[in-house]
Image (cartoon, rainbow, N blue to C red; front, side, top):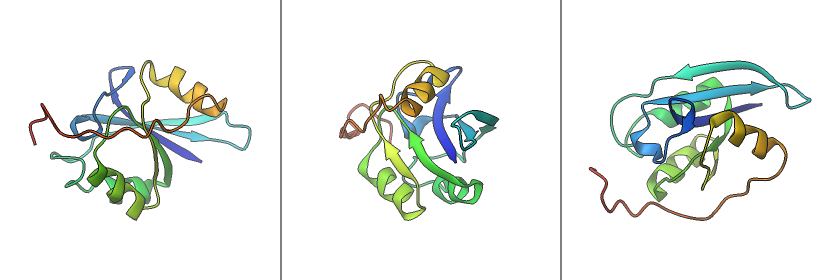
Length: 117
């Protein structure tokens, strides 16, 4: 299974559409990390970029994000990627919490106030 997280340094990026990198973790059947990859997305708003196509091609099934707009959620869904919203903190801590069943979707949406798109 592959999990993607928009990242800034070692933390979850607060806004999916502004992420400069994504960390993609490959997990084995025991939910142990067997591979970690950094992906640099194309420029542009998350809902207007090709990041969903790339995530699908890389085999990503779940994305753990901080904040994201409905357009980007829809694009991810079109490419078979489930989005879990409301994640914050260190990337590996967030991944461990999700694996442990301690993170669920927070049903929040970015309304794009204060965003530059």
